[in-house]
Length: 196
Picture 1 (cartoon, rainbow, N blue to C red):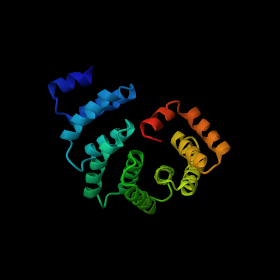
Picture 2: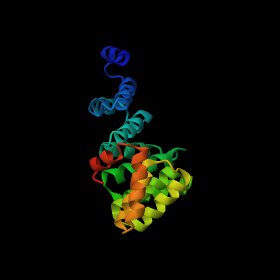
Picture 3: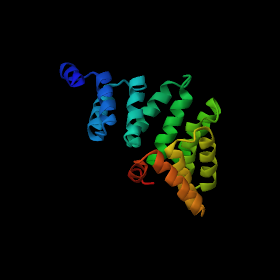
Picture 4: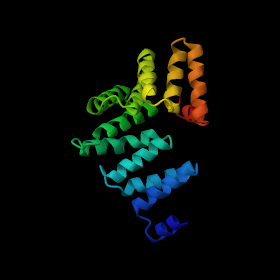
């Protein structure tokens, strides 16, 4: 209610729009969150932290393609930024989820790992890229490395399960999928929405 009132007084407040989008996403109202994000995107300066926040929320609501131009602009404006590695990983992840520009996604992931090391989130993104490319052996390797660091990430288990199924390792694959579902009850719905 406070945010509705604030936005009725100042409808072009990107910070309030972003905050309301986060709250709406938390309440599973993705359509309303997307509307707030679209409005915030028009107001946030290209390459700003607000535009990167909009991009992150687009990925969270499973609209990764909408995040890509925002991430492109942010990365272009912040080539010497200390958080460039995480931004490259975020663009890698968005591209992989959207199943777009997979060679560029692979480059982003490798650059992020080169800058910041083998972080679990980066390896998870790398696994998704390889999964989308049909390189299941490399996907399995990346997911296993990610899970060695962060064993309770549903997406890593899900991606590993799919890669193992495609590699003919049915038993192992089904175990990973079951683990993913135990960690996140909505993982199948999200995966289906993204065409996995």
